[in-house]
Image (cartoon, rainbow, N blue to C red; front, side):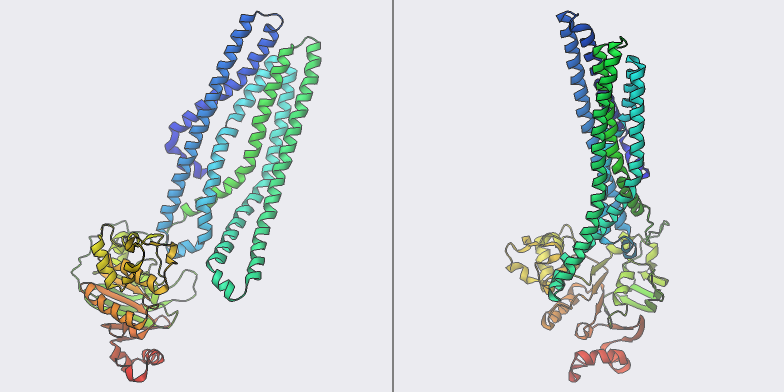
Length: 577
């Protein structure tokens, strides 16, 4: 409820329109039985034809206005739910953009997709049904029972008792349904995880011959969801059959009691018709409300899951104080001073007391074994995580004092996993520079050794699939590098971005990069010695600590770890280039 109230406030005008339309619909629905009873009691058999025609025209007019009210109510209600869903989705998306990697890991990709799509859809549907099926119930029940009492108090008491029994049934069923729907949403998350893993990892599954195992795992996930769905549907089926039985029994009871009351002279025949229509109208709304109320626990669970996302405080936040933009004239673009970092769920630091600088016009490389913390350094510089201790300075200013967008606007980054968005190659390149023309793109493609684009059908208009899966690993890397080079930056970070390139392409690309990035600092994170041996400064990491720093030749002479890495990759006579 808190979530709905939070987002529905700007739409007071639409709510007023919905309420007015519903009042028109309900009033018409209650007036029609009264007019019908009046025609039967006073018109048929005893009234004049003009009187019957006049009342018939009145009934038609009331029916028309009631229908217009119902249509207007449905329209405004649907419009309100659509706007509400849009606003909640935008809020969840905007919030997710503020999350660090650690924040996102708390929820998981599959769960975030479910919350953004399925959960919000359920909230939208529940809002529509709540407004149309539950809000009118108090008015319909109260007015219907009052009008029944005006016709005959005895019949009014019958309707009151039946309404109370139905409301009691609703409360009982809601208590049973709430835990079922909560379990359904968690099982839906699990299904998304299993399906996503099987689709993205289909090659691994086939390579290891684990099709049967994965099929069993999927069947288990689907089976758990099926069992919970069957239990929930049984509730609906039991409620539906009970509702139909109660409606028919009430009609029979009203006909029986009404016939006796009419025979005794307490009411007339037209009054029996009105009472039956009042009863059907009341029971219809109450029973429809039951179906909606059964779904509300599920909507409540979904709203709570959305609220969890919105209430999560991002790990990385901008400093509220105003700090002047750092000057770009400093020699050191980035400087790490005694930086240590520990993940939130880790028992020890991933990085220990790291200090080095990246200077303008120079290339700095970070090399080391797998898992030593190389990529973590890039994420700390981009402030995807905050340092545990120490400082990272951009042009002399602590990056924690800068707005995140300003920090990242001054850095261009090629991630370890090359990723292309679905769309044309030109659209992907424009992520780096939105107003780039074709000449600029061709220049950067040549620099990044991605000339293969010109041989594709349509060239820059050739469409990349999601993730760039219609390109080879080397082609994806070169296009990712081109996208990064499109962006003018003070620091270019290449996180193991040359691993899929052959040695010839690697060498040509590095040579072209020197000219393209001559006024900026370059940070290369790599495992391959040939990629970084010509760097101005090489940092060797081992278990999160700096084991050595210097040029390629200096490290071969003074750093055992670096020499071991070099000897394992290169022939002895080529160690010194």
